[in-house]
Amino acid sequence: MNHDLLSLSEVADALGVTTRTIRNYLSDGKLKGQKIGGQWKFLKSEVYRFIGQSVENPVTNFFENENNFKTGSILVINIPISSMRLVENLKNDLLNQYNNVYDGENRQFFYQAISKEQARVIIQGTIEYVASFGDWINNRLRSYS
Image 1 (cartoon, one colour):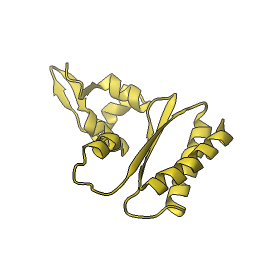
Image 2 (cartoon, helix red, strand yellow; image 1 turned 45 degrees about the vertical axis):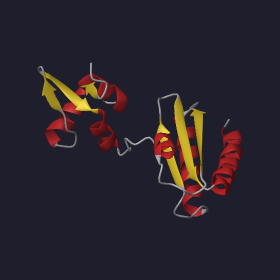
Image 3 (tube, rainbow, N blue to C red; image 1 turned 90 degrees about the vertical axis):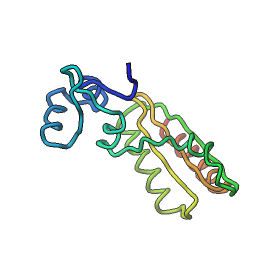
Image 4 (spheres, rainbow, N blue to C red; image 1 turned 180 degrees about the vertical axis):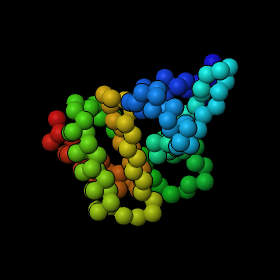
């Protein structure tokens, strides 16, 4: 079984829609898939493209980047989701803080909804940036718990 391929129902479950909606996306050309053995299959990368998420793993890229000779750090924070409203507010606060306060070309911020119960924030950059933004996130998380 190819783990990079998803069935129609798996894509529908992942996106929180019906299989009919996925078929509509197919016919509208919004989502690309192919029939294999009479069943629709979708590449995970295509589903990620559809929802606007990168397939790249920033943690793996950080460790595998042999050409980066600058001192840097990375912080991964797993956040349990207690309510969609709270996590949406937190995500907006994080993005606003990232966009309005922190600048520099060697900084990165990633937000991923891992599941209905968990989100993940990854920040990468100079040690000062990661420590400062990480501390801000830690303080912000306290107000959301």
